[in-house]
Amino acid sequence: MSDRPVAAWPGPDGEAPPVLVGMTPAAASGLNIMIIIGAVGLFAVADVFAKFLTHDTAPAQVVWVRYVAMLALGLVVAADRGRWVWRVRRPLLQGGRGLAVLMSGGLFILGLGPLPLPEATAVSFVTPIFVTMMAILFLHETVARRRWTALLIGLAGILVLLRPGGALFSTAVLFPLGSAFFGAAAIILTRRIGEEDAPATTLLCSALIGFVVLSATAPLWFAPMGPVALAAAAAMGLCYAVGQLLLVAAYGRGEASLLAPFSYAQVIFAALLAGLVFGWTPDGPGALGMGLVVLSGVYILHREGMLARLRFKGMSVRRARRRAAL
Image (cartoon, rainbow, N blue to C red; front, side, top):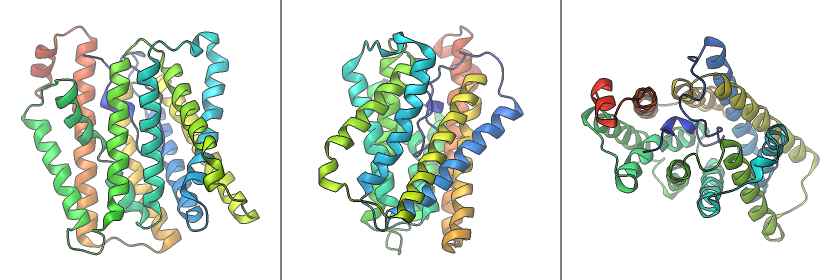
């Protein structure tokens, strides 16, 4: 089993460097936690600009702008790490992962149009739930009582948030759910890649694949953007790129498994910004549903990270699970 944790995915808007638990032994400091919170805050701001752009700009064009920022980051990392970054040992898995990341980001942008920003963000943050389910099916991992309880709580939160038969329950919710599904698939593929390709290689491959695919289809959706849309696109790309750089800095200095649960602060930022910019206010069931999703995801990330750290210390999988009381 790979030591790459669920914690390697911070959410729908940013692809954190797939850092191995234990690559840096120092525990996450308060500064690193603040950096993570700042990063996901920037992702939430980028989502506000993205939602504004989806009114008059094709979703594929909005995603393409984000990939420009992501590719720029990948090239910066590649220039810093040297030519070995371009050595790809698992091209098929990298290709599948790149397409999964593209689908995850694209579906989330599609969901931003018809759905309120906080609900779309919260629904897409069920990624750890899908990861756990896929790990059981494809990686043959075992899940004990506490994580099953967290899974059920998260699923209950989704049902409370969407309220089948209510106003929010529509086909549009399939977009953020699909985003979470493909995000989970990307994590599973990352685990399958393991240590055969460097994290910087994985980051660069995903950026290149998404950029090339979208650029190849540009004649189908590209349209000139006015000054206001260009300014919004530039602001979105800048927030996205700076947020990614902050993630690189934080995950490079602290333990991914300890830092990743703080990515759920993005749901809080999304709610605050939606209230300020769009006048959105949550009702009781909506707030309860988002809270249950956040609680479930944070717990799953925490337990997964604890297990991964114990495995890194040399414990067997069975002993680590017993020690972590999974």
